Amino acid sequence: MYKKKRGVIGIIITIIILILLVVFTNRNVNQMSYIENICNILVMPIQNGFTYLKNKLSGNDAFFADIDTLKQENEALKEENSKLEQSLRELEIIKAENETLKEYVNLKDKYQDYTTMPADVINRDISNYSSTIIINVGSDDGVKEDMTVIADSGLVGHIISVTSNTAKVQTIVDTATAVTSKISTTDDTIIVQGTLDDKTALKATFIPTDAVVLAGDSIETSGIGGIYPKGIHIGTIREVVNTSNITDRYAIVDTAVNFEKLTTVLVITNNI
Picture 1 (cartoon, rainbow, N blue to C red):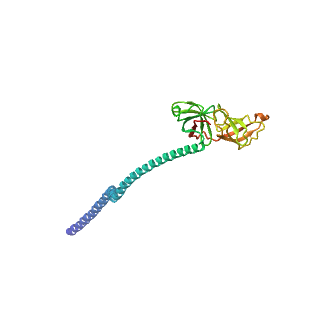
Picture 2: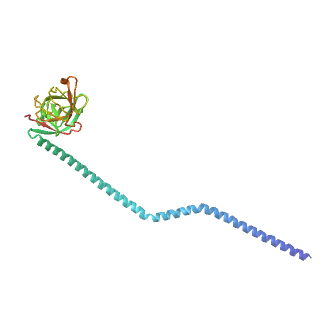
Picture 3: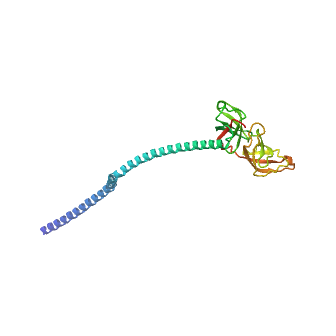
């Protein structure tokens, strides 16, 4: 009887030990799995980052080499572009000089009956009360007061003062300038003068009562007055303004010369 009890107790103890082993074994496994999961969460992103960086660097050697090549090519293109721009500027300068020389030649051919001297406009004063320009020739070049100044399209004005290397020109649109002129189609004598209202036009007055004046008529210098030679184009009549008294009628004359864009002139050194 005693032996049977011992046998049962032994079996029970054995079962308890087995159960405990199973429990503790499963607990260790679960703990290890939990620790491994934490390690994986922490370590895997870092490991993946290093792997990506390694692959990126090893695969981009050619890319960085291409960047260096592109930089060199870009610098070469910049240098070539700079040379082309310099050449273009030189060509523009040559073109401008050729245009100026061509304009001088055209002026001389057009006014070959006169002895002339070319000049450039270097300054201008165009206001409501005056209209003068400065040219780059003076007394050292033989320029004197009252010499006539012309452009390719027509009359510019006359010289009112000189220095050794410059001259001031009072233009025909200056309100202080009055030019004895004539209507080329009828030879009727009139006076044209600058106005305060319009620096691109003149006012023609003292129109003979029997003169037939029409828009589009050409106006030129009459040669009367001692300053301007005869036959230099001044402008074209834009409109005729009739008044209650025919002796007071007048005309608006558009100047042939564009004074805002005037750059090249000729000084007539002999009036014939």
